[in-house]
Amino acid sequence: MNNVAAKLAPKALQRIRLHLARSKDFPDGSARHGYEFVAPLGEDGHIDPEAWKEVREACIVTRFWGNEEREEGLLVHRAGGTGGSNWVFDYEQGDSEDDETGYRFGDHPFVPGEYVSLRDEDGDMHTFVVFSVVPA
Image 1 (tube, one colour):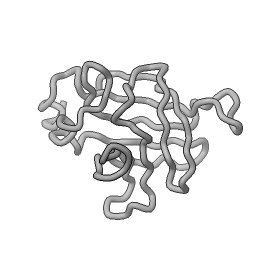
Image 2 (tube, helix red, strand yellow; image 1 turned 120 degrees about the vertical axis):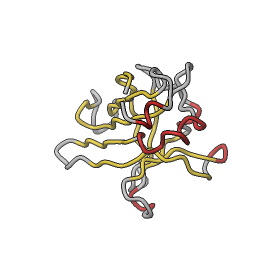
Image 3 (cartoon, helix red, strand yellow; image 1 turned 60 degrees about the vertical axis):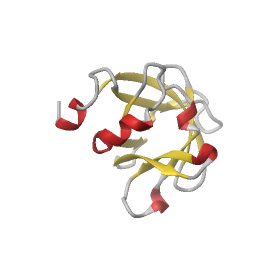
Image 4 (cartoon, one colour; image 1 turned 180 degrees about the vertical axis):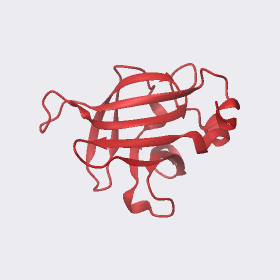
């Protein structure tokens, strides 16, 4: 365990895997399209913004999208959006054009079987199912 992860209780830092949910283009959903990211979750499964401040360097996100090359970035909490802030997958720090924004991520519990949405860099909204949540 690195120093950043040691700052949190062992169960708090979780690895969350999202798979593309059913859609017009993918009627059965797709395990080959999605994200895996690390975030501090509270007991209720919500991302803990206060804990995130202490461990932000450990909150790595990986985007996997079919045969495309994987992209790696960070989970970032930014001012703006619904409720005054939003969670963003940031692949190039300092360049917001490639960011992907979670829709009301702060309101949704990250527990297997729940659904969340992300707006990709092209502005398209996609729905994902929380496939797994395991200790990071």
